[in-house]
Image 1 (cartoon, rainbow, N blue to C red):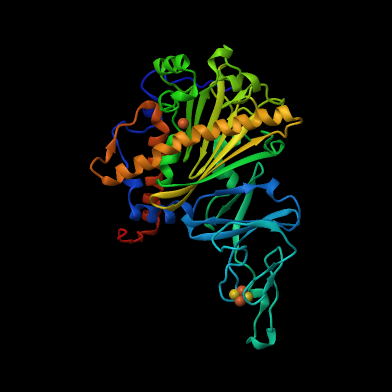
Image 2 (cartoon, rainbow, N blue to C red; image 1 turned 60 degrees about the vertical axis):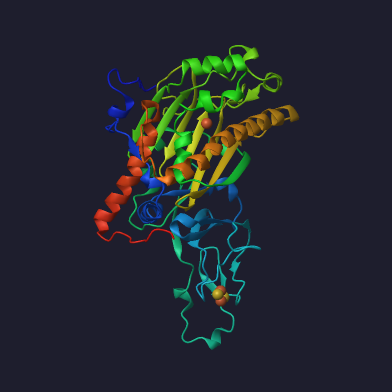
Length: 425
Ligand code: FES
Ligand SMILES: [Fe+2]
């Protein structure tokens, strides 16, 4: 187990080479900066769009709307491979795959994709296979009108796409933090519960809320019994470890609530179901954990939150289940949040209820976290105050905002053609 103590001197913030001055949130209130992030970040980094379990059979597909890159993508199982294509018909540009509403995501299984407009068809490899009234066209070379491919790679069963032909391979991008959790049996966790919310804040603000737990004893005070809550506020919060690798980040946190030291610390329903925020107290046996988990080797370890830049988080919990977050920007001050919980399938009704208690407890916490976001966004947009002091337990927020600015700066320096977008009217 890697030894990963808090730096003996100084702070995590200084340890990671970040400065300690107040941080500007102008990167979260500006349509112009968002347009630059779209070019420099969302069109250039690996974006997780799903898992291989969603595409078990040949011909299984789903679509993903990626507003931040101005794209809609079809992800399909073609033979043994997962492929991705731009969701656009090569005839006259109709969206190829959609159900009742063109902007809604969909999924299903098919042998080929047929355009609703004039009936052109494409096979699962993207080749154009049928043109209605082909003889009316002028020397149409069907081989030149296949679906436009999107780079698509799979890491540990997670399917990613990337709109940049020059981006490094996915595994290289996932770096040391990704390598540290390779081998975790993600494929065993097929009992999936998903929440989706349209949130009125910049995408980075919700990541901020999940990359620090400094808020937890205060914002989530009502989740514990009164006495326990007072104690938690007295202790405050200190993470077991933080780590950074390039744009990616990790917060390693203590647990202690699965099971709690004293049953009286938790609510009656948690006592009955032996479950709660940290999951089912007695989770399944999944063997030895990969070395990247619990990097401090602490016995009170409870959970690790990995942020794979820009918008994908994996949270691995000690009682053997995991959670993912996705943040899909739709404008500078709106995004879609997805929270997905993954469990080993329950074997009886009691286990199902145990998992459901974890699921609804998560929702309660996420609603409390989400509640602050619009309140924060509206106020930072007033721009009466623009800089904010971040403490050492908020080090990963500083890292995130620094990384976003660095991507924008580096990209613009390399292309020397900054995107000019006027402020929203
Ligand atoms: S736009 Fe698709 S067949 Fe015409
Ligand atoms: Fe929270």
